[in-house]
Length: 324
Image 1 (cartoon, rainbow, N blue to C red):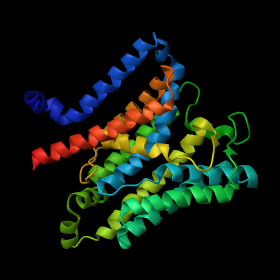
Image 2 (cartoon, helix red, strand yellow):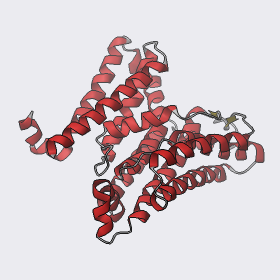
Image 3 (cartoon, rainbow, N blue to C red):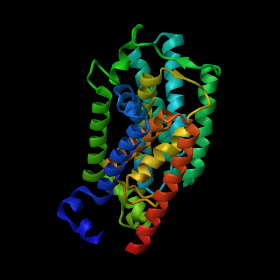
Image 4 (cartoon, one colour):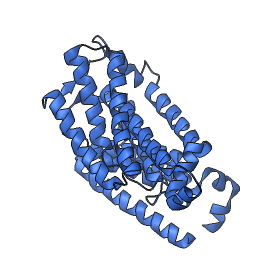
């Protein structure tokens, strides 16, 4: 194993990423075999991709937060809040589709700013802040929509052009957009001052503060980035599934965090991988679709996701102990 990790190609690509890709293809082969090839159909692949898009943006956002050593359990409910408020404004108040999308981004940014300000400037633990935001998001969405579900326009209806962000003809537009934004996130995290400070906060926040860096500002920026990506995820969710109901979204928190942690982001902060997060998200989406294809309920995926989080965190703890 040591010789494999010392291979120049493996070191450049990353041992963890190679293992994740192997697991991804292994899972795909397993589900194809268990369903006698039915899983290989284009409909199953497109369904898995639709799930991966919105979950992927949630995972990309929470990657920045976890990199600081924090956590955000409000991303799922906030995504639903963005979709409900913008969708209700679209359907019941007749605002243009483009304006509805902007509202989704603004609501996501507002929650990101709120979380970041409380964590960075008021020193409220991120766990408490995100739990409070989760309840606020659920309540605000229910109050705004009068506890009613919201259905965005179908592709054939007026304003239905927004669904082209998922698929246009045979072109997987959603996959292209997701990968482009993932590349941008990777550049921000690995090649810019923002990313360097965010990772440094997770490694040793006090040392960064003593060096004269405004740690509060950079910590808040991580949550703002997360909020913006959550707003984007809401748009991709409704483009894939159309109807949104108040009071939901919690189930996507663990899945997004699982994809992030599985991809190599340390829950202790200071270490993050955008490319690993992308592969982790595809694994989670493939699991979700594969379990349904085998005839099991989504409850089984929740069990597997929980196990994945435990194993990933345990592996990270063991790796850190060995390194120290």
